[in-house]
Length: 248
Image 1: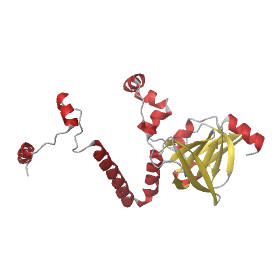
Image 2 (image 1 turned 90 degrees about the vertical axis):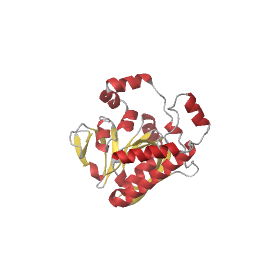
Image 3 (image 1 turned 135 degrees about the vertical axis):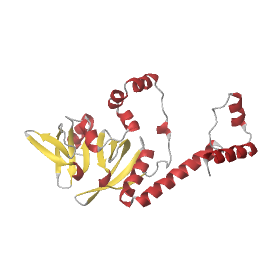
Image 4 (image 1 turned 30 degrees about the vertical axis):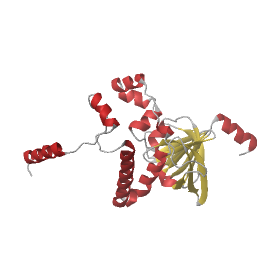
């Protein structure tokens, strides 16, 4: 069918279309148009359809890319639980370990949890299982509330790159960081790193090589392959003090 024939048929069908009347359409007509959705149906119905389509698309992508299936499902779960509690299970030297905390970052190849002042970086490759802790609601979307700030909006319009680079929350909205990129913003911070080979502690050093994490302890400097990292932990001053006093 040619374009002019399709357009003629479309307009003919539009003329015969019976429009449903409801409160939303009436208010939209009074306002001159532009208030209602372009989809037919109530907002609740449209939202349910959108959620169904998203889950179906995710499953289809997982079937087409089985090697990426785990990461896709994990990112989707953690994104929905942003700023909420999750439990993560992983292994260090074949020993099963468990961690509970609040999701604060969902990156391209890692996530960050905060628990009792401690900050944990976990690559997706090291996570065996993630779930909602017992007693917490399955669905809670309070974290999606957005406060509109005209100053930030103007800054984004006039100087997008600088504005986004200075705020971690904006980085997460506009692009997904890698583990190596995120760690560059934590230079000079003392951390403990668990990798496939061993456990090391030291301060994060500046490095231009994204394949390695550089740590410095006293006069020694270590290069840890990023792909071998299982967990990175940094502690708040209060947490470090309590660990020192109580030996925990």
